[in-house]
Image (cartoon, rainbow, N blue to C red; front, top):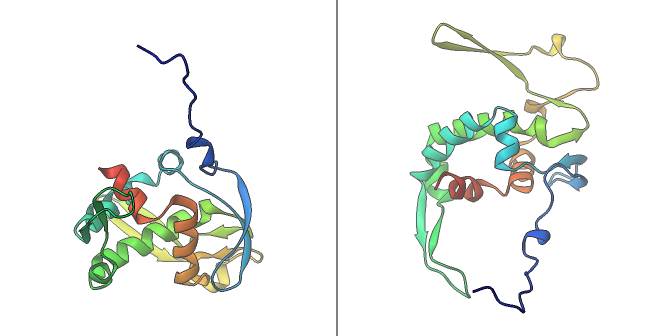
Length: 166
């Protein structure tokens, strides 16, 4: 039987809205306008295939944690283990490179390579410097620390992706 004194809490309203642009400063000091991405927005951008493959890999590099201070028991990414796995790092960087152009609104960011599927083979070609457009930032020009920071800020990081996969 429903309570007659029901007052909903406002937990959902405390979450930042997906797609709202904000001015952010990355660890390197670069400022940009960026927007948050949810799992739903990754799906609509066609990025979930990479994200799901990555989370499957990252799941191998998780550890159980005991809850403390009101937090439940759970899992978290074991960063030390992840950093020792070159395939996982390559997959992570590839996914983040593909997501960053969707996160950063200004300046304009573009992937630094093209991918073409020939039969069952995926062919990747770096865009040479002479073919790059002025005024466009390419993902290989952004430091890894800034790309990871943007990914974490925009999506909630790897732990969010693990929770979605679960």
